[in-house]
Image 1 (cartoon, rainbow, N blue to C red):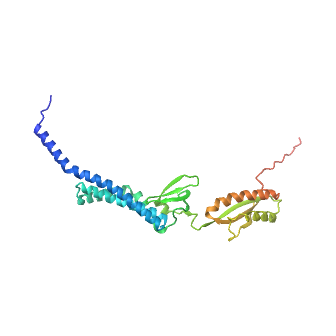
Image 2: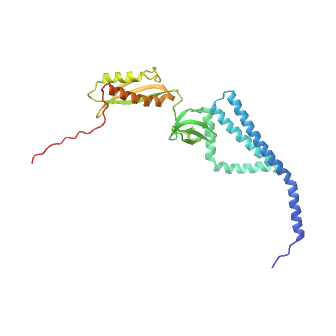
Length: 279
């Protein structure tokens, strides 16, 4: 059974739809145009700001943070402008934003904490882009300090993203802060070897490495009488960037030098004594 169609009502709905289309289509088209142009302008502004920072030789950490913050603020202003062009009253829009902001703020409390953490990092500067740090169980070079996160690059080329909030409130190690770093090596020799001769061989070997600083001077001393070896503690100073080169290269060079001087480097071993029991 078919229902009768009220042609007059359908005609009125069609007329209202046409009127709404004629009224809002130009606004919608203009809003789209403004959004596109505004997005282009934002990219131009942030690009010009970056070039200005580069020209003035701004600190890279501050530069990236300000560029990110500027981009977000400009995008928010653009969205507000577009919404206003569509006929939404600012008072109503502000009220909606207030209610939505409260709900979003409660839902994204962790994100807001990360933003606050980013501001604190920017103010107190415990590290900067390019520093090598250890934070939240990760060690790497700081690639970028964003509004909400810090991006690290590990020595094996992994990207680690750490929220700013825990970094700003917990302890961290900045290996690059002082510019120099001490390299600690433990070298063992046999109990039958001459201690003074071994110390001379080791110091002569490290003196050939130009990366090692002479102030403070290299330090070596007996630090342990272990089960199978007499252990030396060797302390060397060098630039942070040379840390691992000094560590690995001198460990190898010392081994070769001790071998050439017939000084043994013992390794743990077990002596087994067999006794014959007469029956």
